[in-house]
Length: 384
Image (cartoon, rainbow, N blue to C red; front, side, top):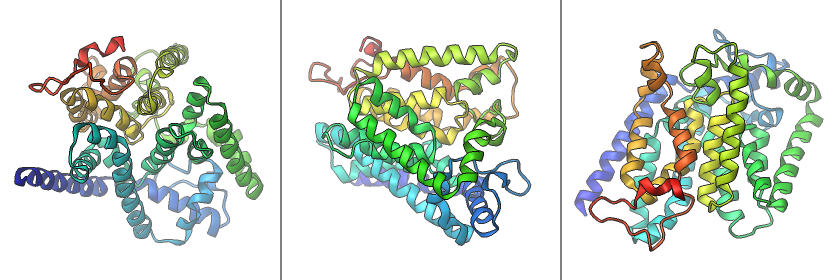
């Protein structure tokens, strides 16, 4: 018992230290962009999509409905925004990890509170989560909205299923891939609810701020320069991978072909997945096909790591360590190809491997866990 609590204490100290270091490193940069844009819009009377954070080329890139949600930031000092963002990120991380691992805890008979505490510390150590914390991003909140729909709404056939996905999509377009999941799996009512919720939120914002809505949907949305250099090492999408290769002339064609292939594999596999498997696979899909997937966007890989852990904790831990090590950023100004083709794209390779081999359901009684290795035949997963 003492050994367990010592391990938990060590993980908690490590997680806290890494979060503080990441906050110092990034100093809530994205929260600063949000707050500055809201002040410029609501207090200075400017056009929100004209705002650029002083000394940077970065501005507000979300739909106008996100501005409505973030509007209180216009009247708060940055330290208050950062404090609230930090508390929310940690609280939501604990919540989603509780949701993710509860079935595993029940099957294994582990102490629930201890297991959730350990899993939460590991999640906070995971690089995309701590990057979300340090930048003051909204990724974990969006993950929670989508998770509530898929793990509870669909499995319990709730009438509100789709509301979370719809709201998340209205705030940031990337979660819209989960609407595609609902359509592919013929959850027509949930898909209609998600589309209706997203449309209602978007139309509300358009009615309140028609000029800002027109600017976003006709100009800002299509300007990829607003979010940064596609070839920057933090862009761990398929598009970022291609942008780092010397294939400029055919890059758009390769990207479209790759996205179509990835969508085909995803659609083939996701129809047979349970709720967590579907959440995990679709999260992987969102990271791969989005034109821009910064490392902090890869919180969508968390459900996949949990599903891998159900089958083989060693494999899951291996992926976790590599993706939490910041090894990718060694190639920010480091070795050029061919070494960078490997080191600068670990998240892309992990996403492709998970897309192909992620288990679609938890182990059954016939998949007995080897007590010596803690594994269930992870290398057989490609046949599932």
